[in-house]
Length: 532
Ligand code: DQQ
Image 1: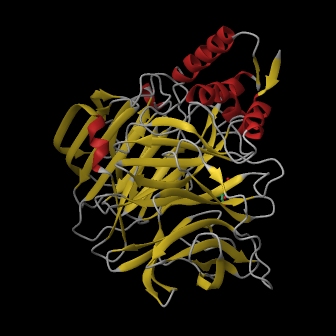
Image 2: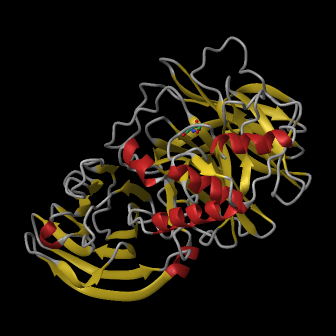
Image 3: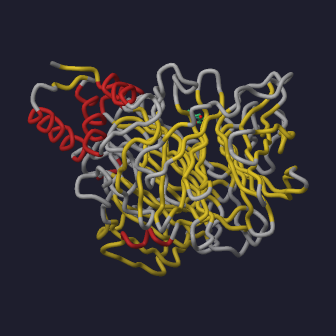
């Protein structure tokens, strides 16, 4: 006998009267990996499931494009981080998850837990659509809060877009959806909005506040503000903040703030407040004043210069750090994603601060350094334009690279990564001094026809006497770059050759000097790339 995996999930759901979902870790792996085998699994023999599962796990583990030290589900699709929460000494991460395959759809909430934001254990799926319920077509993005000791998820059910809650009384192993869901059944009357989703909830005194992503066609994105005493009864107050469609971010990048703001994330940062929104194109942050429940942006910028990072959400941990997580989307065709059996990766944790220049400071969480292995350091290298400067002793696709370049007269300086002999495949991480841009140049990243090419990046300016400090995390097909702890650039590359492992430095137009270069091999967080 064989059954469809999705129905299996639904069955489990139904048997628990639609309010509880229990999926064991083994089921999770079975469900996750089974779809790689074509969406059907044989149930006549447990052995057969285990055999097929093991085979699939081997295939996943052998996939050279699959990251080794980023969080991701064992298989299938993930997108937005949802409700990151530090609770009882552990970091909990939820994320948009489709158990039916490596494509967007039937949105569930996957769940993983970590003691250190680096090593993860998968937990049972937290939320699944309830047939006939307000989230029947998907449990979209949201947040997690702790209400009188009970972790509570606040999320968008579709369709139509309404707001729901679910609570756990057993340490986040199972979740009970509030029987009176939705708790907000419709947007405020009289508004022609572009969307009504992705709640962000926080506490002020004895009241809860909820910000929700929205916008008005041809006008701009906006965030609606609600208030409640109990997370169940909500009153609409007013707009927390509103954008203008024709408004462009300051700086060299002409980035429109769009007509719909998804996944608003609103939180205090030093003596300011920060609002991060995803504009169906870019991820934009605003720093400003929060007065009488209105937010007044003062400084704006891009939370990531590329377009591979989306829908970030933040949490505060016990050290009082504000930590941001984002979805690192794929940069290859839908069919390539389905064939791989997985899609989407969670970014590394970024610690946010208010920068000395008033912009958003972003640095990788120091915990990531626990993965550092073999280290090599170079100092005082002169880089001559046009010369071939691949580092002979360093190779790899799972590395942390820290490079500091002196100010100089070059047109551009940077690093080459994932270089094949003769440069047949190669990716450049480039600071273009002339255009004032930080870029990942991907024209030659892969010989595969199925992947994105072209440069990703945006405006990034150094002061005249400032050194360029790049911190680069290379993890198979993922590149995350931090520049001078105030700009980030996330990208995806899919080299096709197994020898595309070279690392180099380059300058264009004029000699450049590399003050120091440190490279660490990074240890995998699991034995089999399944992140448990
Ligand atoms: N993804 C979710 C929505 C959100 C979007 C659905 C952003 O809730 O607006 O998977 O990527």
